[in-house]
Amino acid sequence: MYRGSIELKLQGRRIYKGKALGKPIITKQNISFYGGVDPDTGVITEKGHELEGKSVANKILAFPTGKGSTVGSYVLYRLKKNDKAPAAILNEKCDPIVAVGCIISEIPCIDGIDIKKISKDTFLEIDGDNATIKMKKIN
Amino acid sequence: MFLQLNSEEKDMLNGKFGKAIKKSMEIITTLGEIYGATKLVKVSSVQVAGVSYENLGEAGLEFLDEMAADGRVRVLTTLNPAGMDMENWKELGIDSEFAKNQIRVIEAFEKMGVISTCTCTPYFIGNIPRFGEHIAWSESSAVCYANSIIGARTNREGGPSALAAALTGKTAEYGLHLDKHRIPELTVVVETKISKTYEFGALGKSIGDEVGGKIVYIKGIDDASIEELKSFCASIATYGGTPMFYMEGISPESKIIKIPKEKIKITKENIEKNINELNDESEVDFISIGCPHCSIKEIAEIADLLKGKKVNKELWITTARPIKEIADRMGYSKIIKSSGAKLACDTCCVVAPIKGRFKTLCTDSAKGCYYARGKNKFNTRFNSIEKCIEEALN
Image (tube, rainbow over all chains, first blue to last red; front, side, top):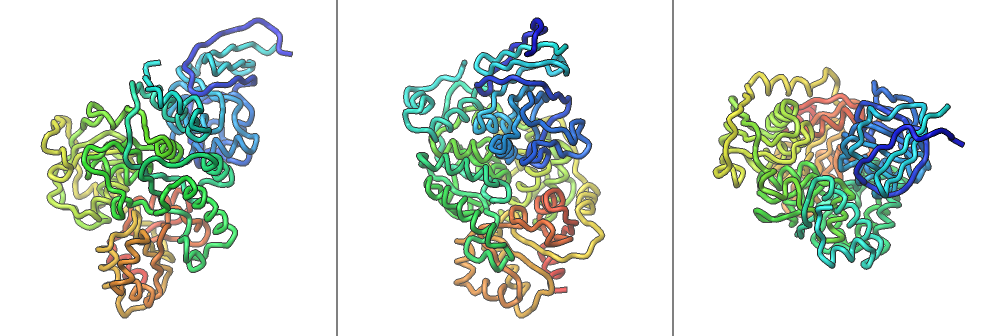
């Protein structure tokens, strides 16, 4: 479906295993899942956040790190049960709330990634087991 | 991978002890790897947060049920407050649908062997570690209290990671379990006399807002009661995300730790400014004392203030159930009830589902104000316990 050569391959650190394919949704701002993301829809609700109003559901969500209450781990779990969780999470530095959320929800998660290197209008192949990301340009 | 596991720990991770322990070990080892731990340590006590059905929702409950299928605690494990008084929820105006779900949450915890204390002050009712003990606690005010006032060792755990420690009896050795990460970075000189719980709350907010999660060494506090310290711990943890501090003459290691050269001052003006910030111009319709949960001393004082009087507004006094039992025997509960106030156990104004029910909360708790504003969209009034009770009688 998505042809074309691999544009870029990134290597990070495994937080949680699993594979995922999808389009990225990228932000330079940190995310608080508790109070900042609607657990039923996957829409970012934090006032003034650059992704406010956008859904993270079934996308590859790339952001620097998590913030806010530890209840955020359960929000990731609720998203997963509602089929609205990100397909995978990419962080610069993974915080305990997101790490625990990914483990209990079984969402592939990689950190140690320079978020700036991920561009939109690409298609990502996430391999959580080996902590690698392949980025292909969508024509 | 630098994290070394012994053969029992490896078996736990490989699923030999069942699914709940496997999941728990995944949580513990992943956090250990993120923070560069080289081994796991035994914990002797766990405090689990994330109990109110309002925060957990159906998915959170599903997670607990999954863990409860084959998970059993290996160490003393107590529970944070729930969204309601588990016995007298009707009196607090909780609807029966919420009550039914909250009971399911407590049952899942009890099935795992978690003792359903439902209090944020485990150190008042039998979960009290000794100095130097490794523990895994996840109530931010109690974490701060355990590290700073008792000198036990705990990171600021989340609900699932605390539960993971309870089911395995282990946590990864990183952060505040290691002495090298318990060194203060900054000295805070308090240049004004601080007294009463609310002023200690204002001090916690002043420092938390100013320095964030840094470990500070606090000078200038001559004396502080346990009640004032619990208020301070709750506030500095809420506003700063602070997991521990040193208070000169009060924290057990304050005499042997090296005092940081870099200093900031907290003046009378700082304290007044922070008290003002938590006081909205708004008419009070709800008063709550007991965030963190009231001690028996506080309940005795409140009963004294309410004796022979009637409240004209909704007043909640929140505490742990064993503390209420003593209050019952002493006649305090009767005095409080006769005044029209509610002495509630197992819950508090932060975790109860009260959004939309009130407009303005009056409390002596700076932490209570933070969640009243952020979570429940209430206005707040912030004052001493005496003034809060006066407001209720007004």
